[in-house]
Length: 286
Image (cartoon, rainbow, N blue to C red):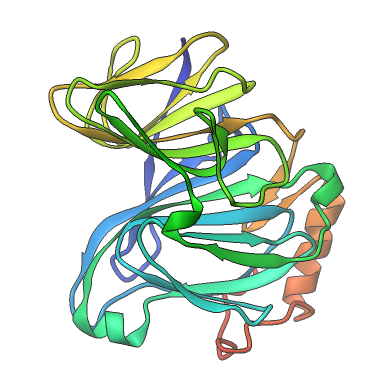
């Protein structure tokens, strides 16, 4: 049932903030339209510390931030300024180009505390790759929930288990936060071409025992996962492929020429910074 197990590789983003980089991976660059997956933390900041991801650009994708703990402040070149908290969703569609930052707000920074969550990028299909940029915030009540036999879940985006999220997407996909009691199990949706499960914490069984911080990529056919002797939390994700994509830094594109244009636009300052966060930015990597 499992085609590949992808481990999270630790990456230091500075100031003591580490992520586990899962996608892209050399042997598997995408699962459905999902082309990027970072496991943020968990990290406990001391008072005065926090996250400072300076303004940076994106094209050709939607970014999805989902927190289990903590708070982050989003600002973008459309003028959006909004905090995200656990169970909420910030869905930012870059399309032809957007710039955003992610930081710890001053009042939260003063207290310190735990930050834990996932950030994914969803590659846009060809018809929407150059769409106008957009940002939408969804509250906890915008996403349907289910409970069955020790499994509790939230359909963050797309459709699964007979439920459909209010989050607007551009291609068929599913993104589901699932908590499993000890010994509980759940079957993955079987109506999508590509499927995976990322183990946030705990151990799960699926053709063997798998530890936390691994992405299980499933092949065709029935598939399920079960928690071990302790509770587990997993993120189910997948959908239909959108076609091959080029990825470089923060850019996703259908062609190398489009990547080169994006590089030139950022280097030349042709992409606007967030009006509420325009004092600095991340330069184009050399």
